[in-house]
Image 1: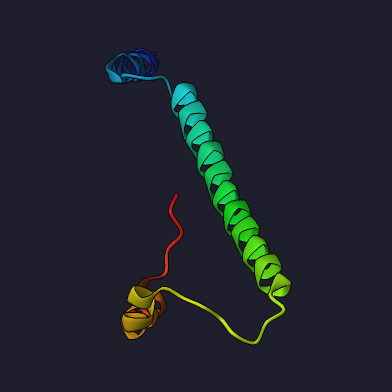
Image 2: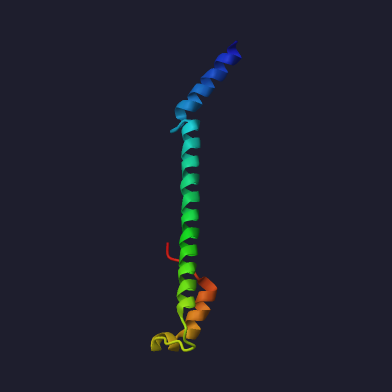
Length: 91
């Protein structure tokens, strides 16, 4: 009987020491996971739309000649090397 009382007291003291109950921790973790999953899906959708828009724009070009700004032309090697090493969509 003394062991049961001691066990109950330790469990009670442990629960009182928690800032959140275990169920609240589980709910917070699940909410964080849901938000993270939504954010990842949102990023993929944005990337997909951007690539689709780029493809549609390129398909509309009928000419064999492409005109670009002089600054882009002069820095094309730098742009290409940076895009291969660290291409990132803005989030």
